Length: 116
Length: 116
Image (tube, rainbow over all chains, first blue to last red; front, side, top):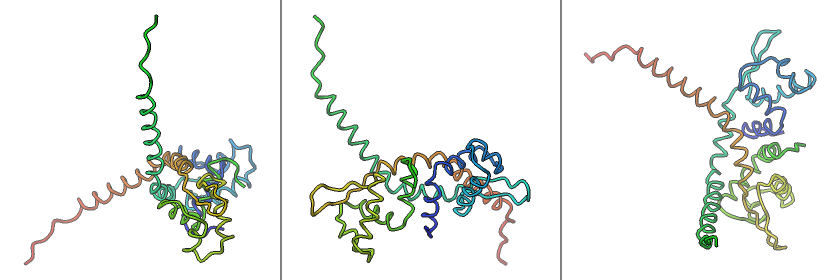
């Protein structure tokens, strides 16, 4: 099990259902029932995913006993993005190289022949 | 085990040693021995982490039998960042709210008294 905050965040994001739950919560708070609907998943299965997200600090849950709406908490997503940003120049560079290559290819094209 | 590419990427990033290996590779290609050095870790333990990174497409390894240098592959990191970018306005908004709150606090301060 990961123990540092960033590892816990990335582990929580390493599941398509949990990412879909976060995407749903980006539209506003929702109950467990509302979150379970689109997944054809049992409430306990969804609750398990919610616990992982809650432990990672990616969602917070209301206090009302029956209706405990879940809400997105974006702080850990910001920290994950901050970590990834350090690598941005690697793919930016690759795109620059691709761009230069395509321009070079283009300049080598023979001039278009006139139709006879 | 995660099966989709994005889940595989996030799972690979959910470990501090693997993130440290990627950080080292950001400075240039390195052999398994060079990567193992700073971690006081056995070569098989490091190789296990490298396999996870390789499966996730985050590193590529040279073909030379003895000296198979590892190289960073940033594509999956770009895809992970793209996913996270959709949530950027959430933390930007929180910072805006904090900023507004601090400005409001500031405007409520009583004017500084002159020293007697």
